[in-house]
Amino acid sequence: MSMTTPPGWYRDPSLPAVERWWDGTAWTAHTRPAAGPTPPATVPAARASGGRGVRIAVAAAVAAAVAVTAVVVLRPGDDQAPEARPPAAASGPAAATGSPDPATPTPPPPAAPSAPEEDATVLLDQLNGIDLPIPEGWSKAEIGIDQAPTMVTVADGQCPGSTRLCKPGRVLSRTLTSTATTHRAMAEQDVVDAAEQLYGDDGLGNQHYGGVTGHTVVAARQAVVAGRTGYLVRWRVTTGKGPGGHVQSLVFPSPNGVEQPVAVRFAFDAGPDGPPLALMDRITRGIRPTGSATGGGVGSSLAPGGTR
Image 1: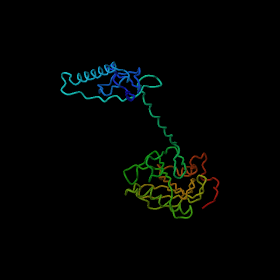
Image 2 (image 1 turned 135 degrees about the horizontal axis):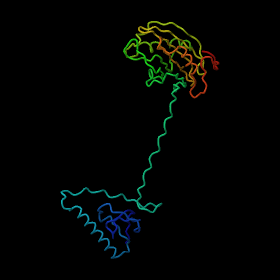
Image 3 (image 1 turned 90 degrees about the vertical axis):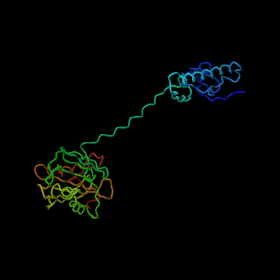
Image 4 (image 1 turned 180 degrees about the vertical axis):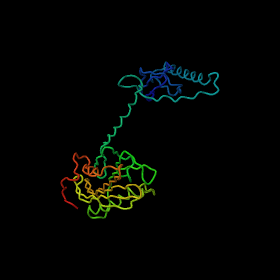
């Protein structure tokens, strides 16, 4: 009667110290060192027709396995039996190389693609689809004002109303929500909020400039920004402490074509530490749609659709 032993590594009946690959029907030439004592039941018969000689070989292998196990367990000087090692996983020889059970190293995962380097000369407002030029001596703020994309002067100055340091120049870009029907009305409303945000209460009860005590309108005009027609309003604000500053709200349609317009807010401290006022216009002229090689700021031709 024939036996059906599945392919795998088994103790060699004639060499108990090694294992030989059984292909399901016959022994092959592939061998490897035995991983440890193997139970007698795992040793397959070489062939059903082996007769008495095969039975003798099997019996010899069983006796050798039992002897090895006895030596390991009964080794003198040991108080406890050694930990049993798990049997080696059965696997076939490598078909391509002909070598048994090759240790094929796992290739390392591909390196993650490196993130594109940010352009240090551009402040990106991805939500509203615009880029703002970052002037020399300015940088992107690590933490934007109210989480809006923000750029600030690199140099600090002493806050006139507290012991903290303040940035003499700040510019941020945000989506504007307004019930006003024209960009002019939107800018006239937004400049009030901008003055309070940038020179009033910081939201934590701190007034680093002593709060806004008054203002004068120094500019109010139509402006073309990123190829879209909008409006700007600029105030000269006085503060409870310090020389005050200039606040500007620039409102225009988003190049992304969304309903909500964009509001770019400026705050330039007055006095010798503040940025030159002409820089507001230069930044405005440099605002462009994201990915565009040209700007479309103040002085550019009006975009289709005219003025709102």
